[in-house]
Image (cartoon, rainbow, N blue to C red):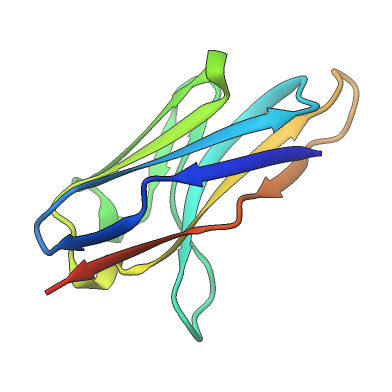
Length: 121
């Protein structure tokens, strides 16, 4: 099992920035991709951004041009730089990793416990 620890959430004024971090530890052979999703009360969790081991990334339309995802493969860590934050970005942000425990194992998925991001208007 892979354990994900998120940090960096908090309260920020609209237009401000925050940087989220997520470090993976545990029985890891390889991590195929890591990403961030977010969820507000009563809503489904939605993908914010995802980055593959080779560096290719995808973003939700709502955050393109404002958020940047990056990863440190050696440290099994993913980052989400969030700039020009808007009140509608307020949510609990969850880190996710898709990984293998051996070369022949199936791909597994693990989620962090979430970190609150609140953007005040």
